[in-house]
Amino acid sequence: MVADQVPVYISIGSNIDRERYVRASLDALADWFGELEISPVYESEAVGFDGSPFLNLVVGVKTHLSVGELSQYFKQLEAENGRRRNAPKFSARTLDLDILTYGEAVGRMDGVELPRGEILKNAFVLRPLADIAPTVKHPVCRASYLELWQAYNTDQKLWPVNFIWQGRTISQVVC
Image: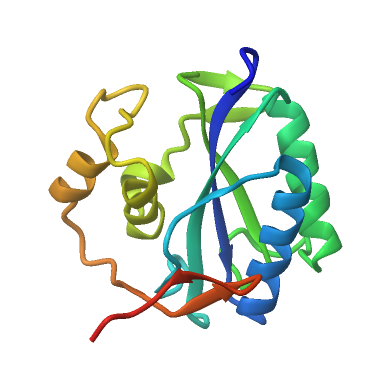
């Protein structure tokens, strides 16, 4: 890792033409950042509204870009993939990209609250984050993501799904 690069974890979600938009986001992120650390892909019920199930995953990258630059890039990528900014907050979407963590940053940076609150609230964020960063510690509560997942206790349901990207098996359900 180059000395000025920061590890960043990004959540990806989609519940409209899900496979298409998740693959498009992975393609764009790989073009932008190079090697990606990719969690298994999960399906989850919509939270906050009645809608189709989402596909969710977390991607880890290393970057020298600022939080503001990342946020701007992700908004552009969402727009290029049909995301409507005028839609209600809790609604169906083609693509949703959120910065979960930016190194050890805590607080508001370039309009983004870090670490993102959904890490501790939503199974569809915490579980894939625990999958790819089990020993990494949450910047505020200092517990590892695996410890946080093991202690997680809500009725949110999610389940792994088979997912292939660029000929690579990202996740596979084993019966």
